[in-house]
Image (cartoon, rainbow, N blue to C red):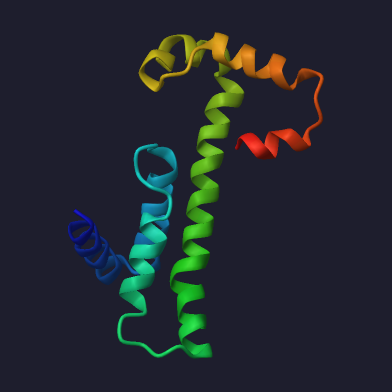
Length: 125
């Protein structure tokens, strides 16, 4: 399975270049079952195949993978945040059963963190 994913990422990277990494990162962030490191590790493996470690290789890695992937993950997260911010409770009541989250789960989490320090949120994410 991993070999098929690498082959698919290689085709995307050859055809679209950094734009393919950007789009794959957006899709990876929006669709939960896709592992978050799959795009980064797969494309890094492809880009650095047979290349010796040098400053030029790191620059190539940064420009072709790190920047597009970072922007893609950020935009994908903003998409999810925008849905949650503007739709909120009505969205969860309608689609929560498919996502495995209910409004009661959100209220329980809010009560758990209501009288606690914000540092604890980092431990649960």
